[in-house]
Length: 368
Image (cartoon, rainbow, N blue to C red):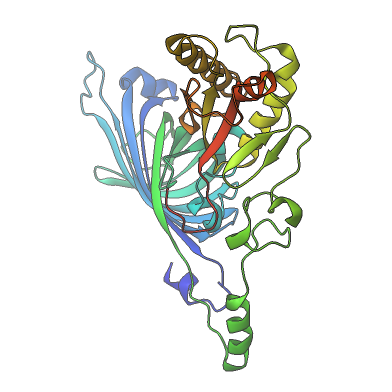
């Protein structure tokens, strides 16, 4: 590890990990399986590798315990301690920027990473020391938002070379271990050294305004900083049936309901599908779905109807992939007209559903 830290070419971050592998052990050798029962094993390993690399160096120790079966003269348990050195080969994990991102980018198999390793062992069993090797395959899944822990199944083949010691069984010991691996660790980022002649360029780069989505509109004035969109639409993408703004999703057409009911008419499905897509495109949106009614009818009826229509829209959007914890619905009866209720056209305009944006991430460091 210290050699890797000292290498001048090691500009990438280093991943330092600690791994525990408890499991169940079963002897594969016929003579041993007759002598020993189903047992257990545990391996503790330290690993080091470059961020984004495919290979990790590994050092550890394994304990193997196989209880002796009854009915045999030899009643001692089969135990072994085995320090090890080896390599692990794996698919690279996410970059530091992705690990710290909230929410994480979508990954295949929920971020699971397959791995395979191979180790050389120095095995001590009582007064007898021998050489062995072990190899394993496994699958690790990230646990939690911080991705500080990885958990997954593994299967390990463990073999001890008996050699030909006088007075000992000279057949090789073969054991299979099945279990779960738990891994945690940290990432060390090598500080970059800026030469004096480069400092001016670095200052200019830092002073430049960030534009995460590359649409030419700086994040601090971009209503949708993580989605490409024209400046004419405040940096938000253009949809056919809705307009995405910093504080509202504005529908170009009304949502139609069955007369005096909360059932959404099929003609409004395409508009609501676009609302669902817009919310999926920008994970920062949290919206309140508001139902409004005209002044016709009793207040209690209008309040109940506006509530049920807002809930129906929420259910539709949630059933099309938007998490419910990003949505809230509420009915306002006829308390918030946008036109006069004295005319038929005004009453028609007042019967509506609105999508009000209550929270949006405008730039890095924003608070929820």
